[in-house]
Length: 158
Image 1 (cartoon, rainbow, N blue to C red):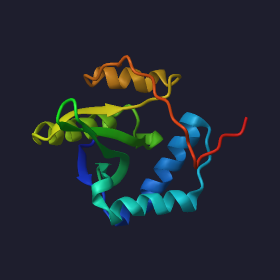
Image 2: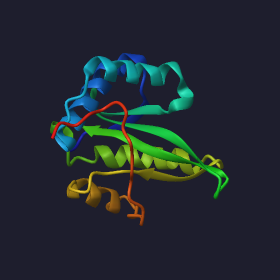
Image 3: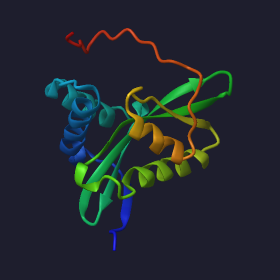
């Protein structure tokens, strides 16, 4: 019998878990080693300024199993706010057990109950087929947009 999954807002006490999850996700999905001090400061900055976004924690039993962060983007076209799903990570021993689905369903429910929220968005590495299939199963669809950026902080070595 599988353990129940509960979702709760993250608190400062979860910062170590969030830093670990973000660092492991970056290494696993993009082969990118993050500066842990910068990452730790970034996680704490979100708690210091809630208008930047918020984290959610999934727990199975009494153990933290996964995380998800939302940030906000104003859409003048829709006169509403998109919630961007970011920093998604599920601990390897909890994968395939509905942890991401529980996080997504929780955030989706919150978003749908807020009249200012016009939708959910996320970005995913083009080679991460497993994640893409998961997002499709959750009811998301792939858009016609490609993402462009000019990153002033993270440098990738060739």
